[in-house]
Length: 95
Length: 466
Image (tube, rainbow over the protein chains, first blue to last red):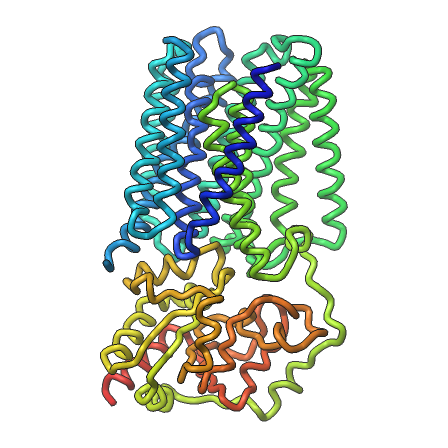
């Protein structure tokens, strides 16, 4: 139970930190912010690899779901970071 | 590997993510910020792969290869004008990944038999089911948003009058199934029922939302994808998932709020497709009759030639007409002529937060020329010419003056205060709010009818040859 309370505290504090950080992002960068945070939410990859690598005892369905989760999370990570970088490069170029 | 060590390394990743987002607060540091965040991701993934709880790597390698190829191709090939679709797809993948992860973890406990009995087991199950619920809604909702933006289905509101009752019924049944699963995790019918209800809910929530309300939906789904990741973190007891998921959730929530404020509408109004009721119907013919003046490109060029300050107001129509490069050329010619040029960016212009900024950045307009609404509004009175291209509702003076108007109170760009207003538009058709725009009938307004790109190119040519 202590564990869950700790995690809940972490969750709430991170939300506040997120609000503080993101209110400082200028409107010009709102689209790269969304794609960049999309890439960060690809962190589910960390959980997905655990599910996908669960070993032979797991059923085919588990492997299938784990595989799908890995694919989608990787799309988020790779696609998100690359497209954000592409957009940000356009903003940087002029200076 | 020692779990404490793994957790400490996750902490390092989380710090990289936070520094990464901090970098995004300035255009100059943004590229580096994105890089830092990517490094954080790499660290988290590598340490997870090295962790001993992984026994088979085949599915992981296959998944990373497929996902990496799809993501890489999408990110490098996508047109900047299609960026809202890309964001919608990424949101959907975020939701889908959390759903897949939660479903896999449920099945790994032998269909719910592996959970402890009592309160702790109930809490564990509730995290799994919450992730399933939010993940499913995010996934199917984002796919509908994608289909709308890509115009695979109509971009306008689709639905029937009772759709909110259907949504309420779906939501209540999903919550009920979630609650029952906490007491009886082995009931797999309920589990699949929950997934089905949540997937349908995602579709029916987004279908009735259309047009100019899309930025709110995109931002909200962005938030959901983060919350789903955080919920997945609670399932796995994984701190880096919780921290980064909640950062993303907070980001999406703030963007959602900014979008709602910029439209003077509450989130519930947007979600339930309610527009404020006007006290009386406004007759378009009465407003426009005999008062609308149109002009040709040459006449506009003559006015622009002597202008000292020009403000360009882009809207979704500019994206539709792919006119951003043409607009930039016009701006170049004006500046070469000694005219001061700025761009007025309304927060909800386009189909996602920051849509206009990305398009103009692609056309190499320097970002310091892109000015936010609050800063540019006081300058319209000193502006000789305001050029409105593909924007409508965000320039409607009724929002400021007509208390009975449905859009009364919505912050607008005060283009009507400029000496001359040039509106480039196909016709006098109303914008998303369905209202006539008195701006078009004002004494100082000139309409240029036609395709946005073609009209801008013609004006630029006439100006350059003058």
